[in-house]
Every structure is written in C-alpha cells, then in structure tokens.
Image 1 (tube, one colour):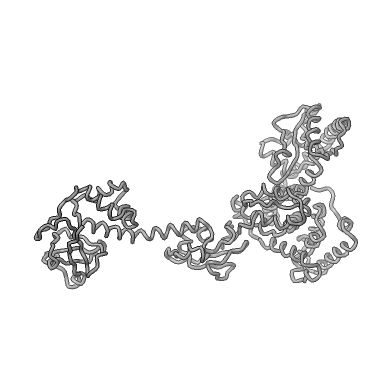
Image 2 (cartoon, rainbow, N blue to C red):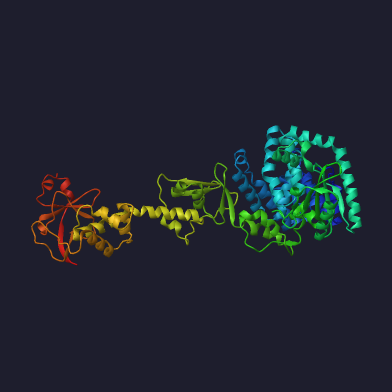
Length: 621
C-alpha cells in the first residue's frame, strides 16, 4: 500500500493559481449536494489518485465533475466542451455494469469485457479516470458488506488491474491488486505483510550494503545513477508463491534494487559492473530493453548472490523507461502519436507500444481507439453474455453468432427493448434480443451486399449453405427428369443406374441426379455414358410397332415434355398414342400405362382424376 497520500494542497500546487480556482469551484459544486454516500468516492478522491500520473487540468476537472450527483449540471456551458466530452465518456464507462459472477467464471467472456471497456474509451484519459475511481472505491470498500467487498475486489482483479497493466501504468496496477487481494484473501494478505515486516531490518541491511558497493563502482566508472530499494507488492509475492509452489522464505526476489541511469547504453554498462562484482544466476536474466514486453515495458532484470548468499533482484533502466514503467501511456499522452498501421484487435496489447513510437501533438487520444478497436462492437444477450462482432454488424449477424439455428429462424430483433430493423448497425454496450419463428426460413436477400442485412463472413456462409441445400430438391427432380428422358430414348437394360454412378465416379444415385440437375453432367455426356454401357447402335424394340431405326422416343404429357415420367412395370411402351395413358403418382412423376391395363381399369372414380393424356413421338437423333 502507498505510504504517502496526496492532499488538496498538492493538487493546487501542481497547477496555476487560476487553474486552482477552477478546481476549487468544481469541488464546491459537488460538495453543494447533500446526498453524499460515505462509502462512495468523492470526485476529489479520484483527482488525487490521478495527481502522480501527470494528467492535465481537464482530466482533473473531469474526474471531479464525473460525480453522478452532477448528471443534470450544464458542465459544457461552465467548463467547456472538452471537459464536458470527457465527463460524458467517463459516464459511458460507468454505465457498463456488465460484470457478473457468471462472466467471472468464463475467461473468454472476461477478455471480451476488457476489450469492451477499452473500445468504449474514446479518450484514453477517461480510462485513467475510471481506474483512479476504482482505486478510490477500493480504499473505502471496508465500509461495505462482505459480499459487495468480494464482488468489487474480484472485478478489480479480472478487469481493472489487467487494463492498467496493458496501459503500462504500474502505479495503478500494483495498488489495485494489493487492495483487491486484501479483501479477497485477508488471511493470506496479513501473513505476507507480517512476514515482510518481520524481515524488514534484514532486508534493509542487505540492500544498504549492496547499494554502497555498487555506488562506489559506478562512481569509478563515471556513471551517474539513482539507486534505491524496490518495494515488493504483496499480491505479486503471493502470485509467485503459487506459481513456483514455494514458501515465502524461499522466494529470492524479496530483496530488490532499482538502478536508474540517463542513457540506454549505460544500462548495459551497469549490468556488466554488477556481474563483475557479484555472482549472477544466468537463468534469471531478462533483457526487456532489446525485447520489450507487450505493454511497452523496458528494463534489464538480473539476479545476483551477495556475500551472505542472499539473492537480490536488480532492475536497470533509464529515466524515460522508469517513467513509462510507472505511468505507462499516461506518461506520454501529450506528446506521442499512434502508429498508422492497421493493427488487428487480437494484437491490441502489443500495439499499445506502437502507439507510443512517434512524436506529435494530441493524436494519441484519437488513435488509441481508432487504431485498436474501431473494427469491433461488443453487445450483450438478454442473459448478459457478451458477444464480440465486427463493426457494422447487424442483429442478424448477432443471431448467427449465437447459433446457426437462431439465425435461420430469425424474424425480427429488439435492441435495448425496442424493435429495430434487421439492417440496424449495432453499437457497443447494447442488449440484443432475437425474435424467432418456428421454421428455418432464411431469405435470399440476406446475402445481397447492397441490402446490408449481414456483415460477418460466417453468417453469410451459413445463409448461402442453407439456400444451396434447399435447392437440392428441385435440382434432384430435374436431374431425374433428364435421366428418364435419356433412358426412354436409349432403353438400357436394368442396372443401368448403378453403372452410371460407377461410370461418373459418384458416391450414389442422389449425387448423379444432382449432377444432372445442375448441368454438372450435360446431355451429351449422359447419352455417351448410356451407349457405352449398353453398346453402340443398340436398336429399340416395341411390342406392336416396328422398331424406329436411328431414332429416339419422346413422351409428352398434355403437350409438355419437361415432366418426370416412367413406364409402369405392369405395362410395355406402345408406339401408338391412342393405347397409352398417364397416371399422376404422388412421389415419382407420371406413370405410363396401356389404356387396357388391368390396374387402370380398377381405378376408383376419385383416382381416375389423376389420369392424363400422353403421346409418344419418334425423334431423329
């Protein structure tokens, strides 16, 4: 825990006399309200937490004026549009009360929520205010009941300390973690705190001796450096104990020293001197200057053994590196610019460092959000589950993200309780409810890019697949009709269907019909295959008429030839039209019979309504 707490006077000393008057006025506005909740942070508490992060006057004012009791106050008229905009952004962040016990048990949902918070921060300073508010909330959390303490502390470890880490703000990260750990596991917190206190004198003596020797060595080398003991944070000690499965007595880096120099090259000179005077442990060496961490952190880490065989961790960095390690993005926001590269959301952590690589005005404020999160929206299901979608996604995209069947049966949507069109562009933080029908009925219009029903490739693919599957029935029927006509002309022997499937190397007859219906196998290929199977120049024979040499037979029904027909097994085909009749079956097209067929004569009056006129023609090939 921090040993020094900034006061109001520190706040006023940081700014000019005029700015101090404006701050006092903002504080007076909040104090003028009587409904003060003692367990909730005051705007001034948040501002004091921000003081060491080098923020500007606008951020301090926004921290104070974001108090919920000023929700109706005309902030823009009195403090300007910039402060008002920043206050609005903080309130947007405060309105995202999405975290729940259910989300806490799902790592993927927690990560989406972190991104949702980052994407909602249009100004990076709004995030700093949110983090500072959470720290102030933790400091007053002892006044709350146990359930609330546990919930807020766990939310802090799951959401806010990781965000502080991604922004590289070490000061806030460690403070948030230690306070949260104290509420979540008070016994373990007290145990570590007491253990550190019991060994405090021994640690101080070891550190003092080490610093004395190193300072003399640096003076002889002409290197000016600031050397000081580095406080170990209780939560980080607990994490290391769990990770390495060691008792606190066996942790080597409870003794830690930080060396701060002027130039990057001096970091390596100091490292050489340290390794020259003390025995180092090679496997504990890390060069985060040549290979920075994802959040931009840079430093040299090494572990040495002193004369009494105590292990001491030494961190070596420049002033600028140290400032960034403590303040992260907050240390640079006024004079850095973001990378212009197209950075994918999943690489957002690594790209935070890229946002700090080029110098120029205030453009980091805009680029922080647009570079990292402009292509994503985060919305909620009615049950509170977070869904990560591409920017511009619609309720229909959301439906398919939930489940393919929900998308197929989607008939409408509600956003925040109100009906919206399926082409509505979803916004981060909105709750979406899908209205479904009983049957799957995707519309072909959904995949028309000009109509903007769908944005996500997965949803578009699912609709296309469904439409393609539904077309199979018609294509299969058409394929059967094409095959039936070819069979009527060539009259192959029984078993031709199996031979055709083998000939075209298809898995089954269904795929043969589909290939014919889709023109994957054209008429010429089919005729050739049938003739190959039966032998060329095979002559067609009929019962009562002479063979029709070099010709084919074509059956028409009521003057139409594009109908699925077949000769009934009980009858033989006749060349005389007057002796043929068709019977409409329920599943296999038109069955061709002789008019004097016994089965036809026994039809009931109702069944006779299914009889149709057919004709048989000879067609030259």
